[in-house]
Length: 231
Ligand code: CA
Figure 1 (cartoon, protein in one colour):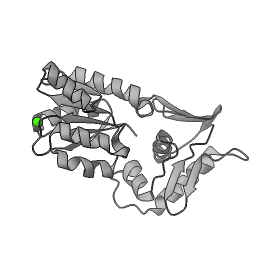
Figure 2 (cartoon, protein in one colour):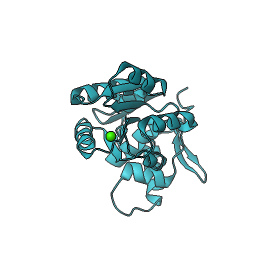
Figure 3 (cartoon, rainbow, N blue to C red):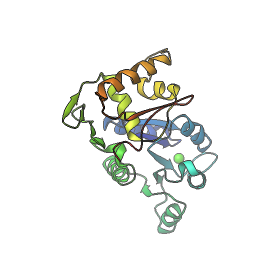
């Protein structure tokens, strides 16, 4: 499950360029063309980073940025502002509104990619790390391999994605519907019980005998990777 980048940009030529290049680098993307659509997009799935255009129809990028910073759940969300205004005063204003970085249009694609990667490495290391490590469990995204201690854990591709998704944010509880949406994606109509079946299999593969169970079942809510696991 790669990092999700939310692009808020009304100019199709620019958001298409960004989508193309970000996806080529393995990121997932979502585009909204106006500030008013940012919250609905975020409530569907919290992105790992927002590329936010300054000049938008309706709410401006600055207003959106301010809004994101005043709400608890998006206070620490990485934001890169895109703008044609390169003057020093505007730059300062952009950063003082709470953006983490600032890119002046016209930008070079490699520059945007470098900034995105650098901000994610700094602020969302788990979203771009080659491997996730919690206690004795290591999930290697590059080699597509899971180890518990030195033991190889054989997982199906779906179980791998499920574990990866849960391990990215230990402690956070995801409903079956959220997991279906983010792990299974567009595989058509799948019953929510499918999630239970896969979590069951994942558990069985991960834990042998008296080994601790890193997955939590939260009744009436869903599943989480136990944040106390390995602590
Ligand atoms: Ca614009």
